[in-house]
Length: 172
Length: 360
Picture 1: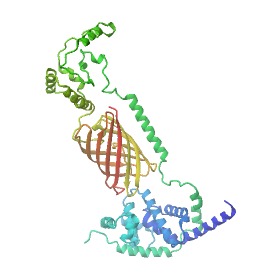
Picture 2: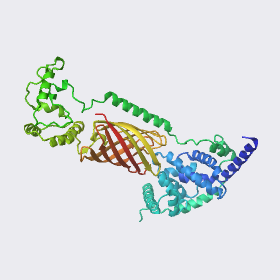
Picture 3: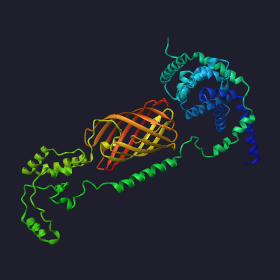
Picture 4: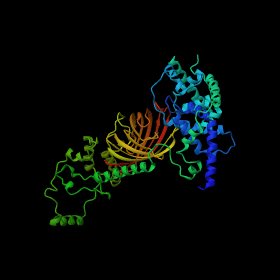
């Protein structure tokens, strides 16, 4: 690599780091909604997402907002990460969880904490689907993203909602 | 009161949370992010280098090598321990009339007409052969022996018994020799059936142990399987494997998929998949078998599976159809549906074709 290329590479890296740093909180939100469990995996996943973004940085051509591109890469990385680390964990009650919330959850809204707890009970596919729904996507968009029919998404979502209701009732 | 959780409040809460997070100050400095990348190649370097799989699975070559070694072991074992062919011509010792195996087990390929008297030429030739010292038959070779049930013992194997009514039929046949066309018919069907009967244990309708098709046709069989497995989580995987079954029990199988994962399985009908790491599994099943002909068998099975790599436990539904190609080879096609497991929560479809080699 000649000096000019090195300088160019360095400049690109600095640009990338600055852009990623601006979206730092967005990456955290992806980690929490799609990939993290009740453990200390947030930092691991954060690093994995940053590396995945850097690996595919060349594919970002500036047509869309950087944050949109980042969100989509980060989400896929988080889902894959969750799938790999999908291990059975002991049940933790919502009350116990709330006591330790400060470690990994600083939202002032208790509903957000409850949401983290609820989606943490789902398997990888269901969590991905629920994450997209919570993220504001409509059924037809989710169907397109997951390569499934809209009816299949509705059915699965209905099943997930029933399951979440059951979990929540159990915690009361 | 509805049975589903209303997620709308969570949607709104998350929207607000996302906005809050986006406006929050970053937790990582530029230096932190640079240090995360320090062990990572640049996109240009990464693009110029071949992609390394990030999954912690065994390399494909190792899976293929293990499958090859298993095949070699299986073939060697077959070559060393395979019993003599049941249709091999009988030796002189086997033909001694004072032993129970006096009746030859093969039928001459040229039909013999029992109604035609022997020609003088052939009689003279026979006498000449008997007078030659090196061709003389053992003493007592033509001593008349009473026809008893003992004669039929060699054919009695693996639940194939010749009942007295068969004996009566045989005696009737000797008294009323069949025509040439009847002989040909006998050669074409009965001999074939007798070979299969000797090698085919009787199959109970309901089995409660293993669920492998192979013993429908044999006691011991080595199978080479090719198949595909599909689920939403893993996509579609191609599979290859070898397995050994004996006396209705699966002695185990070793399988590999196209993503380099290796599977060791016990009590499994040859092949399964679904995990993305080294996996050891157990499967048991109960089911119904039906064999409409000696060559065709169908089986429907319901069983459980336990997978240790990426632990999972669930039920599976398995249906198989097996066809006996010839004396040594069987072909089995099976489809298996793994119902959503306790951990994975998703279904898997597996289709497998197995070529089996019958050892005994």
